[in-house]
Length: 109
Image (spheres, rainbow, N blue to C red):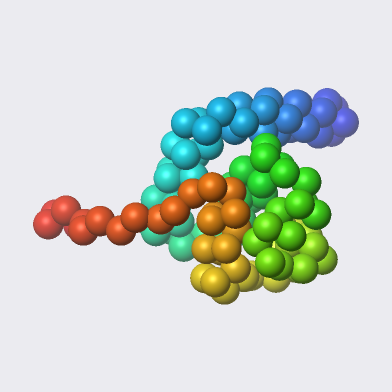
């Protein structure tokens, strides 16, 4: 039973990563992940989203080179052994081909 669940999760993750190879899908996924982070401050969920995006575009070694981050540090980040600072998060996002825009919250927020 547990093995089937693990296989389903692996299949889901593989399908998700495949879908994130589409730049528009990747952009929507990153925006949704950042919005969710702003709501709940769940850094682990944001790092998982960045890992999915990274694996859709590069190997971890390639991302490390492009982001200027040690490969071992990226593995620790993606394994939730280390929480990166904004400079690393922004470097990863930039290396994935994205930028961040800031907009004012609505008055009701």
